[in-house]
Structure formats: C-alpha cells, structure tokens
Image 1 (cartoon, rainbow, N blue to C red):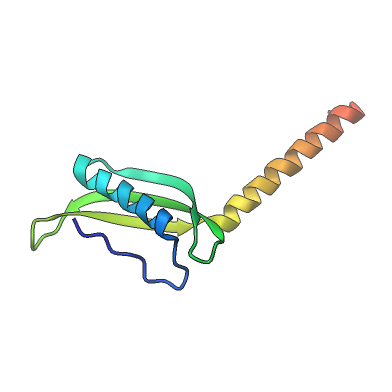
Image 2: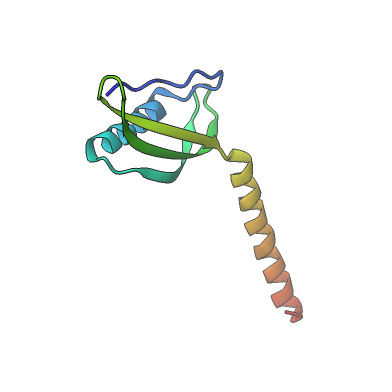
Length: 102
C-alpha cells in the first residue's frame, strides 16, 4: 500500500501523519472502513486542528493493489463553536437553577 501525504500549506506533524498512516494501513489490512473518526491533529507549526476523517478501502482498477480512499474535513471552528455552546448552556442552566425560574 502506498500512502500519499497531503499537499497543503498546512502540513501536519510527523507524529500525526504516522497516526493517520496507521489508521489507513489498518483499513487496508482489515478491509473495514472507518467513518467519521474525529481527532485533534498536531500541525507542523505547533498549532492543533480538529479533523473529521473517513477511510474506505478499495482496489486500484489498474494494478489490483489495495488502496484506501481518505476524506478529511477541518472542523476546528465548528468544534470550538460547539464547546462554546456547551459552556453557555451550562452557565444558563446554572443561572436558571439559582434564580429558581427554570
């Protein structure tokens, strides 16, 4: 199996890339898809981003080699918004409880 690194200006760290390669290798070996795997990924510049990834096994029509289709979505902004919403909801619940309105 050949694993291709992303060709973007936002490169992930070697450790995170190795982790992704490990998932792709497991998918190729087991033949079982991994859908909506959400993980925090360390970028090469030291920042962290949150990605939702899916890995689906397939067969190269020319060589017959097992390949893995990988789809990634950067959901960092959405993840942060969800965390802020949870925090706001917790504060509202606490305020309602303290005021005996809710």
